[in-house]
Length: 71
Image (cartoon, rainbow, N blue to C red):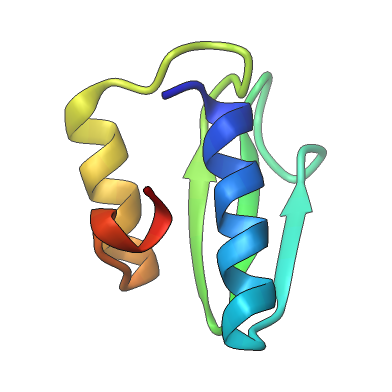
């Protein structure tokens, strides 16, 4: 999954669950950006690139959601 797709799915999940969602591409260093999902946050590296499996699972863990929630 690409970073942009991940952001899109998180935005949809936040809307369904009534949580706040914010994407700040300017808060990261270089091509990194920050996602605020409810009261949790994580960093997304270049949204145009494919997310590596370990990075993807770590981001889900940081946000407190399961993979099945966004698929």
